[in-house]
Length: 501
Image 1 (tube, rainbow, N blue to C red):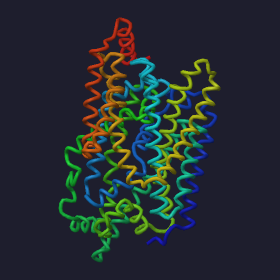
Image 2 (tube, rainbow, N blue to C red):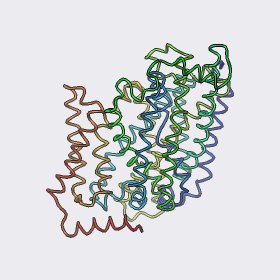
Image 3 (cartoon, rainbow, N blue to C red):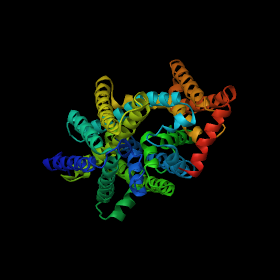
Image 4 (cartoon, rainbow, N blue to C red):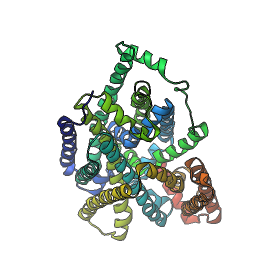
């Protein structure tokens, strides 16, 4: 049993951080242009982009929230996680090639061509604060889990991880982020493979036995009734349906994930990447959450107030000295992958959709300098926002608040982007109608939630705001149809999606 955090644990984490910085230094000279820095040169191997996509699709919040759900409900977090599999497969079939052909230098630059330049700038202005909020929440989560649950200093956990992410992304751009994601994948894999056997050993010891098979038999005998139910509590099938739509929208339009599509070498590679992601998303959840399910048997009675710390408590209970450092590195890996991708994607939008538009004659060198400055600014703002969040509220309250905010803003941002890629009949001005109308409706719904609180819950806010956004897209097409020139531009855009460039 562990005796707490040792010098070996700190050494493991320090070595992990040093490796990330070395990767950034290695790729610093390979990012000579902003296209290379942001992935616009389209040279990433499909397997590397796939692992990076997978790593960017979750963070330390998964260790916190889903492990708590696994301890309390059993199989439910696996059901929730598996909803991502059909979402990614749908993306592979209908969006992967379109994203690769549509996006050039940033995840939203196609919007100016498909809709209007004004809508592209509006998406950049609206999307950047959401990215900052999401990233700050993830950084606060890893700092809280590692600092409070594992015994590492909270302040320095947040600071050091934030600075390291900025540093290697600043140096090497998306290629450094991809390479670090690949390394971090194997760090997480090591923990995922080590914890289940240790938990099975503890289960077997409950009745004086030994062996993995015996431990699994004890687990099956002693779990509560309904522990393997697909749904439980508030996680009903209605919730699952809404969550599927929400996660599908996120996986299909998240800036850093879109980058993984358009950075691949070919259309075929974009599809292969998505299939790899779907396989990883299917295989991972049962392995990830089994330790928390097992803890329900050999560590019963953890109160609800401490349930978000169940993964940390579990690790300190079963891991030998030195292994905690590997778990901490794995948690950092999960969050750092997501943050590095988001930092690079947000910087890509800031440079290509804001800076370049106001400085159209900027040289290649100027764009590269702007790319690195934007990366530092994004990282610095996220760090500052993280400490504001820590001071003002707690991670739990902020997570609930962020879900409510994303329920309002995600449909108006995601649905016009998806509609623009798939539906030829949408007029160019309909995109702005869907964006503005959807946000206005979502904010009105959020305000009405002051009297009827259920309207602020994601299970209500997301579908209602999505329906309003779709209605505004259709109404915008009727009220502001394209003229001959606009129709010609739309036809040209879809011709490029069909034949490539």
